[in-house]
Length: 382
Image (cartoon, rainbow, N blue to C red; front, side):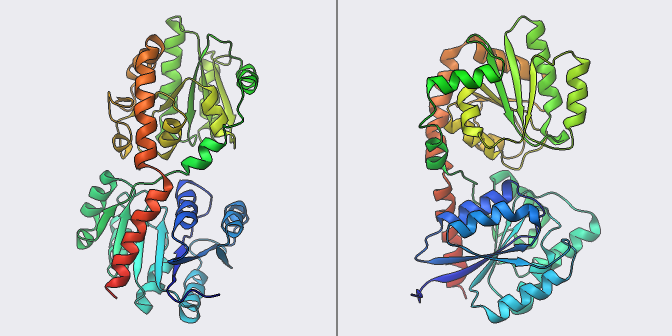
């Protein structure tokens, strides 16, 4: 039976792969009030998005896959235009994974003057030509969402025409799901995991979950672990993720003869279990829009070392629920990790505060509620 008061929100992205922005789209769709909002996901028909779109379908959310070859294919525009024309769309929510993405959706929304909300997941300055095009495309945007306060300030500088329409809504994780994954994580499983990682009871396992990309600063973390080992610490570094830096990291590990101390696990689905197994979490990014994985680490009650960049300080408060270091600084990374090794009391204090902060501030349900307020404001003005 159709809910006459229900508003249809068209979610759109021209993303090529499943990443952080796409996972946030799913969580937002999952936790929006179903009595008030019906989500229609529109995306490309690339095979690599199949697992992602299947999650929407399993949650009863309609998915429409566009027949396009790439993000520059003009058929994006014509197919979105048809959807707006023939479907009862109340609002379009464009999820911009790259500042130059989704231009055809902007064009279609502008043509039909449809209420428009835009989330900029990772804003940065474009070339002058692309920036000029973007400023023209966003003129009719009703609200622009940034995933951190720092990003909101960046967007206000880039797009002063929208400065009064830009608002920060922090990303979130499904904390209930995350915690449920470890309900059956027994001591036996813990020992099995540590054995697989080559760690005895005294070995400190340092974990980082990140794309293997230069901007994540992982080579500096390898250098920090090398320094710790040279200083006599019994520790191992576990790197989880895939990306273009894998080959360079492998060479670095071999050059430093750290094959027994640094493990590259690649892509893993058992992140909650790995976090429950390890002792310290480190995110040494050079650039980070938000740092969602830190919320997972806080939920897993891991002591955290992270770079003082981007949106990270909005999650990790230095000396309160974690330690912040300067980017590209192996010495600070090593010293901060050693603080946790030397002081289990400090680690325990930070993890309890971090866990509470994650539950109170960074649950995906809260992200959905804050987004609903934006929808309500935009729709009430129309």
